[in-house]
Length: 81
Image (tube, rainbow, N blue to C red):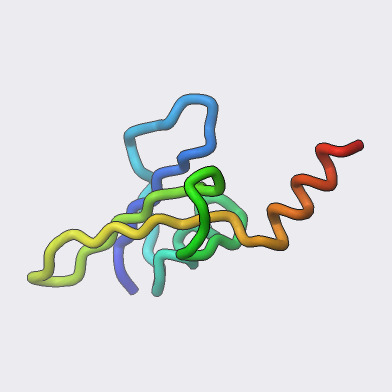
């Protein structure tokens, strides 16, 4: 497991202090911290989190995670009510 830092980008005010968890992947770390499943591809408007990890003697790695298409449909459907 790797120490991973998660920054939630969809809060009213973005907290620059990341939440730190031990997880096997950036997606799992985001799920633990944010409680939602996120994916690595998507459009800028669906950007949900930035996730940072670093393996021994390697540079810092950053991954952008986006809401899943099915999650977007559920959100859009709830807005229509």
